[in-house]
Length: 466
Image (tube, rainbow, N blue to C red; front, side, top):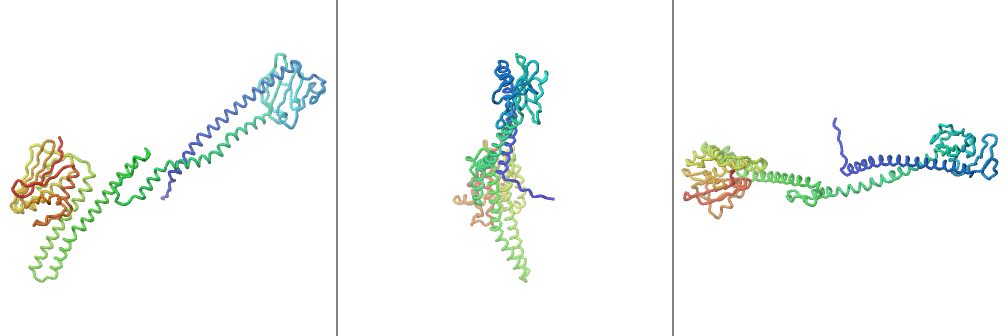
């Protein structure tokens, strides 16, 4: 079963990730801080408790407290049970939460607060800090015996410390409860601002017109987005190239196939309505020639499409120009025999190697040699020469055909151009294919006077491998 998953936006993901990281860091830090402050608070309160016990023992030892039968406000005598001074505790403040007991060396109670007067005297092993329960409440007590052999027990109710601990919890929790939503809002705004270059890139892509080759600016983008923009520019360039090739191919097909198809249909219709066998044979032969020309045009258009789409996407390899020229001449052997043309190939003893695209170089040789054969009259000459000239590989294709006037030699490289004076029907794509192959290999091409007295010399130079 397929489930459609709608991923959250990058802004939402980054916001929640940052908040999660903050929560994962702040909560443990808050807990550690709370535990540390609670420990320090308990140590401080224990220290104050011990200090108060020692101070109280010193005061009693020096007779600073009332003796028995003293009649002072807030102090009462209990002869029946404690035989000591009992200090009453005011109930409306924090006094009920603290108290003390003082015993003489014989273990008799000297003085006590009313909230601890009923507490049994401490045993000899109850020294130092203790947690005891008295009248349903937990007390933190400190017991000591001073130099006067007085036993002092001073205590503090634990709920007082619990109140402080709750205050610490609120102090540490409340900022998080208030601050986290505010932090989430600020983080969301910061992430939105940080992702502004992505939004700008999106707007630029949305405004980009079809067919535009203007690259997206990468120099002003953040470092993390530059590789994305560079890759996007490369992809857009490849896409525009592909669209241009498709458009060019469609234009070529529409331009080049319309006339031969119409001519073929006319010849076939003439053959169908004619009763004269000789005329039928003539029109069918003309239709056959039109179809041959149509096949030739389709072959040229496909060669151009393969050259533009395939060669540019392939890696260059080392290619032997002599081998490619030999294969092309063998392929065109029927045309050479048909026109009785003296075709020859001369080359250096050592192979002439160039780095290039085999599809493009083969199309280049085929179009140049075929043009020379077609435009040269029967019984003429076509010579192909391949040799080195320093670091260059030089290709010469010479014929003794009609040639091309000097003023029109640049125009023949345009698409669909054909010399009007030529008796041979060209298709206007051959030399354009040659020009495209020359550009792919950073080579140069010249159309010169033929050394045979008439005709054309096509010379190509490209860098050869050492």
